[in-house]
Image 1 (cartoon, rainbow, N blue to C red):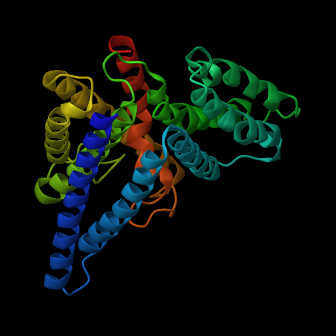
Image 2 (image 1 turned 30 degrees about the horizontal axis):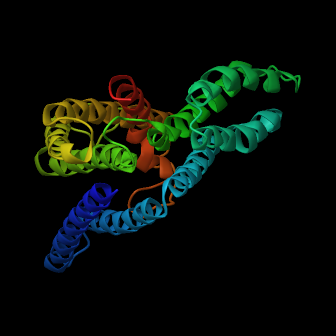
Length: 312
């Protein structure tokens, strides 16, 4: 436990130093360019939001595993609400939505808190996916039946199942890594989120060629390569907070940053289809909850199962 507390303190001190440096740079840029500059305004809003997010996550870490599960439960709830809000439903989806919000969402996180892997790993992909079309059919409405059912299924899969795989890391028993699983969550979130930030910065500084102009106009090949490479390198250097070796941490960091990129791309495609820029306005400078978790959604379940299979 002493080792865990020391490593956690070092990690958050490092994050604090980076945020202080970022805040200082943002302040200098704001003073230097007195005229309105949307990029600098957006950058400072993102930095301020990161201070709040790090404080919230740090507090949950300090309170223990149950607090972390509750935190991600709330995040899933906000994310599911955002998803359902932009994918219109009608009164015939009433029972399916009640089931999603009041049974599936708390049920999945209760199973995670109980460390019941045999059930939380299949609860949504099997039982819930079979139950949702049943609830949709009992209303007697067949109009857009497949589309309506798929929206709720996909929303639960992304916002509840995938996000719940982050606190599910706490259920893993890794020999020689006891009482340190919170650091696995920190590793996953830091590497994936850093990849997003670095892709944004490198893209703004050096980006010229669009990687998917119709899906996500802001993403560039230069930003993709630079951000992925830099975040994977940082992930490798964080091997000391994981059960991985340096090279294992490098490979896993590359895997989750790539998954995070494609997750962001998929979620951007959904936003473009719905004609919106952000999932919401919950976090200043970041949009909605899903705008911050889109990459984590795709990286978390793969990371969880890879760690469980090879180290658990």
